[in-house]
Image 1 (tube, helix red, strand yellow):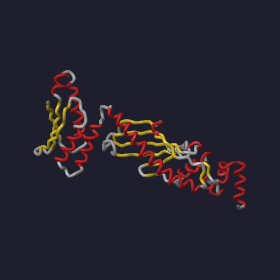
Image 2 (image 1 turned 90 degrees about the vertical axis):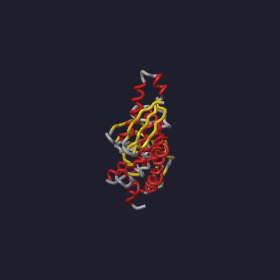
Image 3 (image 1 turned 45 degrees about the vertical axis):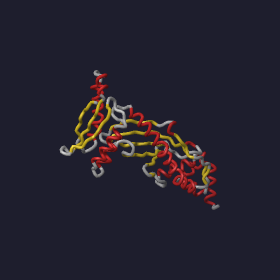
Image 4 (image 1 turned 90 degrees about the horizontal axis):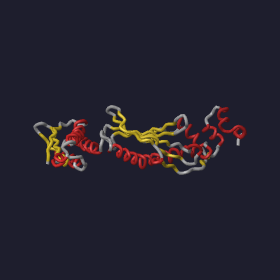
Amino acid sequence: MSKGIENIRNIVSQIGLWETKKIMGISLTKLVKILGMSIESGVGMANKIIIENINNGNLPTEYKEFKISTNSDGVVYWEGKFYGEHFLPNMVETIWVMATPFWDGMTWTPVETDWYSLVDRGDNTLIAEIEGGGDYYEQLNEVDTFSNVDDLLSWYEKVYLPSVYEIIMDNFLPKLRQDMDDRLDDNMGYSPMRESIVRVLREESEGDGNVEKFIKKATKIINTIKIPAVKRVGFDYDEMMNGYHVNIFFDRQFAIDNPKNFNKVKQKAVQEIGSTVTSYFPFKFLFYLHYE
């Protein structure tokens, strides 16, 4: 051991690592490297070194769809945005996950959803949001000691990044999407029916315009969803008008048995179907109401 390193060790033994690095004007990472120290996760050193290297750009701050950052409290956040992958094409999902390596002297890494939202990009409207909690929590395996700084930084890239990503994509995101689906199912302004219709319309509008294929798909999807007072919905192509007839067949007996509220039920059904097919796609739709 050189005399210089021995002197540094003596200083550390007297005033500690944190004060020594301040006196020397170097980073904690560099000081630990100079001393050739092993790193214990349970005393906060592993956490401090990783945070330091995230903030100074020595460690990746992006991983696939996610951006990684820290706040003033040393919390590591993953932020991901997803565009039209599960919901309507104009919707953006944002997920914030806290995944701070060896947080607060822990020997493991807690991973927890902090916030999840669904926003309509068209008018920047927040559709709904879900706060994190125990339902969206996991943790990475414990690691007591790293042999040196390089071993710790290698763990971040080879273990931490892919492990946190897998937890988010395979566990948190599917659960959050299901929870969001359940919430939106009760929302007058959004429904699984709308999502399904828009998906098939978008597929066909981007394809070769096969009329028969479109009619078959759209009809099948719409009629698998229960719409109050509606027995079935059908599509026909009007070549002269270069548009689609949307034929909504209402239950005649329902209308007879519920004369007071049928108009409201009918209006809601027509509005739901109509706003969906006319708001998002460049087709011409002509609506016809029938009873059977």
